[in-house]
Image 1: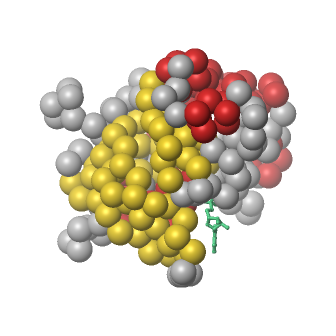
Image 2: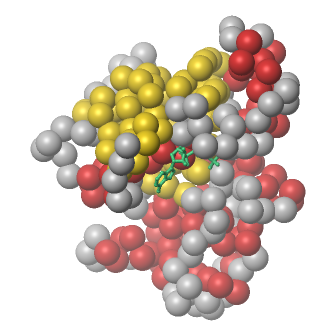
Length: 253
Ligand SMILES: Nc1ncnc2c1ncn2[C@@H]1O[C@H](COP(=O)(O)OP(=O)(O)OP(=O)(O)O)[C@@H](O)[C@H]1O
């Protein structure tokens, strides 16, 4: 791939829930192996935008999207594209840790691979993913105990390990630390930093400091529109738009 080419290119994206126009004419490029933070007040369309990047939005009743989203130049919304294969390439981690409650730690990580009919050595992959998710040392002696026995922060890292197991190229994270305490949040932030060596990350966050700490690029959404996108330092110190400045300095939101 050409180094200049974005990993993801969004052009003229609109998204609806029935008549509710939640994302309006959004265009943005996401560079490979970078972290993009999506910020903005509640209800401005951040999560909807994120779910359009792996075609999860259309799973919501009434969910509909138009426009173009390309992954390495391939149009995700082309008729010939299987959305299931897209969700494998573009993984997702949600706000609340959601491990499969009846499964062990190890089975949670392996679940996606089993579903895909994987026949190889699962133990090795489970270990690799738990290491990548910075959880291995804490769970290596209890791999077969229930995932629900883990703390919230550990469960979230388990969900990250589970997302990594199917070897996605992009990781979408929807407020991945908002349900966690400050120490667990710091672990997730460190982890994002480590993961961007191998994955392209787009993260929705309400936490301005977190966006400033973890991201290379920040996109500010307001009422469904992308007001401004740019490198994170510029967005936080010298944004073009007054609305961006007001939001990042806490004047509203
Ligand atoms: N399942 C749904 N059905 C109908 N409308 C929805 C649904 N989910 C979200 N919306 C609406 O779409 C708009 C965008 O919501 P979205 O969840 O993307 O915002 P957000 O910026 O992620 O908000 P928050 O920060 O509160 O999570 C809002 O007006 C919301 O009420």
